[in-house]
Image 1 (cartoon, rainbow, N blue to C red):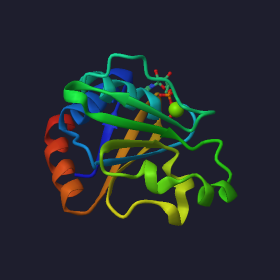
Image 2 (cartoon, rainbow, N blue to C red; image 1 turned 120 degrees about the horizontal axis):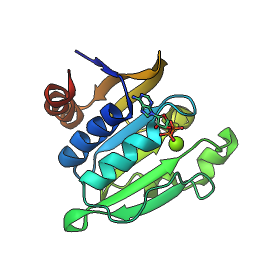
Image 3 (cartoon, helix red, strand yellow; image 1 turned 90 degrees about the horizontal axis):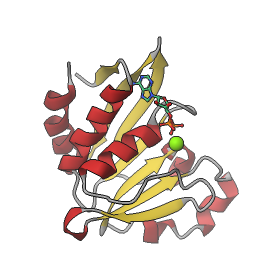
Image 4 (tube, protein in one colour; image 1 turned 180 degrees about the vertical axis):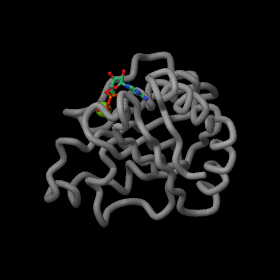
Length: 155
Ligand SMILES: Nc1ncnc2c1ncn2[C@@H]1O[C@H](COP(=O)(O)OP(=O)(O)O)[C@@H](O)[C@H]1O
Ligand SMILES: [Mg+2]
């Protein structure tokens, strides 16, 4: 089962919350979906579950925010919506992709060939009034993360 229904916003928040209890530094969560698909909602619930106290907003102009959660776990929250393709090579993405943090990347499809090799990708799409979430994992750690996540969120 790699696709789940998210019939309402609380379902998106439950998914984010479940993920927030499982993530570890080095994990890479790629979030893809059009405006309003629920990417930031998911990140907010994830951060809250992971003990991030500060309010989470989309880093639209700065592209990246650092947040810290329980036990000093670091989160890098990126929103690449405004990223131009020719900026990609100059951002210093290698530093952002250091495995000292959990990476949460909205509009990750904008990374193109600069994307990481290992990731959990969540594609959110509209379905009626709700959303669908489609999961892909790459690499053993992210396969395991997905295997632990799905039983808790599948309805
Ligand atoms: N599963 C869902 N069903 C219906 N509405 C949802 C669902 N998940 C989130 N929403 C709503 O959709 C909007 C998503 O906004 P946001 O999370 O900012 O999207 P994005 O970051 O993808 O642009 C919010 O108004 C939220 O309440
Ligand atoms: Mg957003």
